[in-house]
Length: 404
Ligand code: LLP
Image 1 (tube, rainbow, N blue to C red):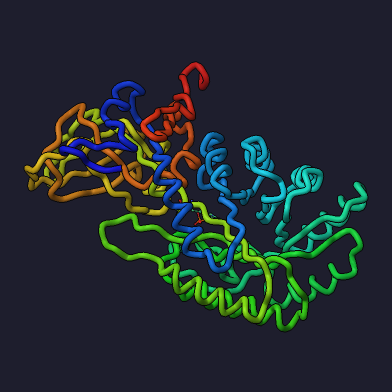
Image 2 (cartoon, protein in one colour):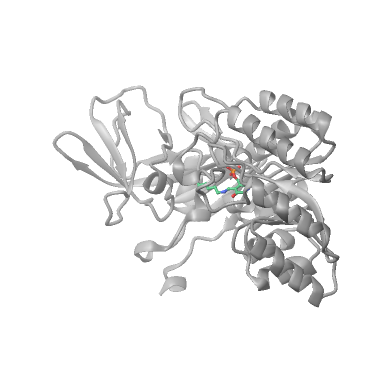
């Protein structure tokens, strides 16, 4: 995804052409970028040969799931819907892990019957429910236990999951008791110890701390876990500053951990696989001149991309056609929705913009479309995949007829 002669191209296709043909707001994904991210992830962790389960919540488009599956990844799911989508996209149940604090009996039954790799349980009540169902079906069920390591992931509080005040996982003390309980259950096979401390993590040290807690649990429990599931959370660079998670250091710590504990590592990355592979193209509906700033009113809104409104997340905005002349005006890029949080970014020194022009909101591949809604009875955007210059509509634009 880059500029050629000041025009933006995605996998060899001129983005302006796509926006004109398929209209806006429009999500576009680059196949090559997804492939490159997966290759980089695999290469970084090559020495530990992990099972990589793509976190479906970050992007649950079926065509993308199929492509990601073909590139060798399994899936991490958190609902029966995600599980069905993953399976129907060709991802094998033996490469699927199921997390979440509130799996319902129906969801558990479905997962058990599909014989997925692991149900990562998050409480004693859930273990008892899995045991009850496994007896009804007379099955031996593979389970994992999700530990709450009480580690601060040093990320946004809304997307932190590994501290004791969070609803996720089981405390160190309770997990030791549960391990003893499960050892005695005939229908349960404990295979995995899992963690996931949060999302958009840019500092490797919280991961190191988590590995220390895992090690302590392993030592105290004296149980041989076949799998250690380290979750996802690897952050990406949303801004121009070059802060990057040091995956190499994380890998070194894992290798040290594995010297004492011989388990297969599982990862559940979402954002680091798909985040920077997606963009949202939007058209300027109006420019409203204000006193101190000009409002650039887009046809995309918080229902299409809620991250800025929900987490105050920053996404770069760039023009589809680059011009050198910069203005001194302050531009505030907003959507048309009747909420003051329907705002994407405030930028000084952008190039002079005019009505009907197209802009690009960057790095929206993860938690963009998957968090979109029909708020204000707005139809959801279309999604395109560009693969080696070929264009595929992977989600049709919702029609108002669908909604009304
Ligand atoms: N595994 C589990 C159990 C998770 O809960 C999550 C994300 C992941 C893996 C994948 O995390 P990733 O590698 O994508 O960071 N909507 C928020 C992010 C919420 C993440 C929830 N859990 C956002 O837009 O930033």
